[in-house]
Amino acid sequence: MTKQAVQTDHAPAAIGPYSQAIIVNGLVFTAGQTPIVPGTRTLVEGGIQEQTRQVLENVKAILEAAGTSLDKVVKTTVFLKDMNDFAAMNEVYGSYFASTPPARSTVQVARLPLDAMVEIETIALL
Image (cartoon, rainbow, N blue to C red; front, top):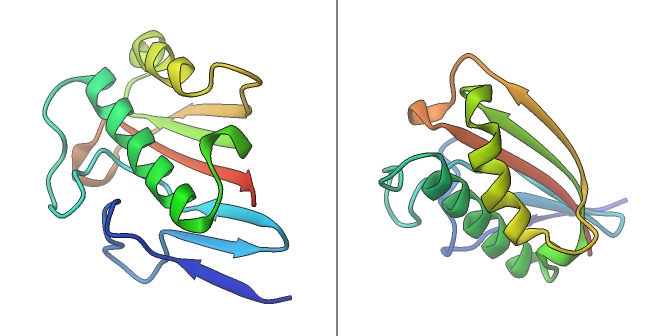
């Protein structure tokens, strides 16, 4: 079993000892993505919907760099700073996964990097 790291400049660079994604056995595992604007260390301006959109654009860029797409995502985990943001996050999330949405877990967490409102990680088929 070999694993391959994925790296793209179209998503935020890893800020620690981790990869943006790892490919192994026909699956792509993305690191949790926050709403950081690529090429910066700052969060996108706006509320939960703008942050969710940026997170999913970051995920999309990483998956494309790995040779796959959002259509092939089979599982997501959504981390929310405030579960009261669920409906607004879900509206944007649903626009990215319109047909055959992946299995999903959503949890509220105490704090996210840079005080982001949302973080999402995915598992996709290659």
